[in-house]
Length: 155
Image (cartoon, rainbow, N blue to C red; front, side, top):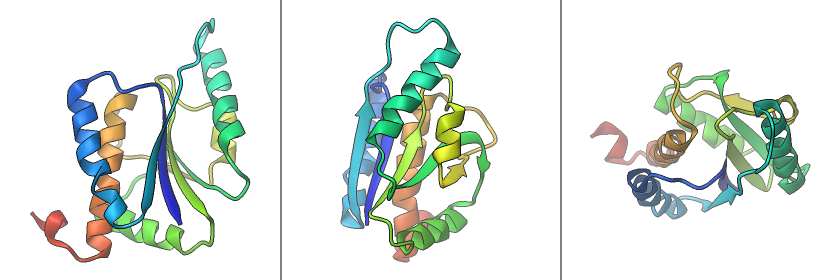
């Protein structure tokens, strides 16, 4: 199984990029891992058009065999321990790729919500879509340390 985290647009803040990089370097110790930055869609007139165009780009990159986890404020929330158990279960589903998707600043279009195999919320609070990148990558790393019964989670 390959695990990928996809997001739309580059990460502007250096401190976020550094944090993402810190955990991104650790995840491949547990699973084949990749991050995919999808270029921003330009020249749209409304947030609705932007969401639709972003969804088309993402859907064109997906395979029907991919397991897509969409990060969305209306998704299901977990504790870190339950999230690790969920990842462990998803790894057993026989799919080649598990993809976590963080949509753009205006959220995900209904097309993506319909395609998603699971919708995950990282918190009932609202974070910037760029900050969510760091939070998600850290939680994925944490999940693998929990699965392996390593001490990171207990610090």
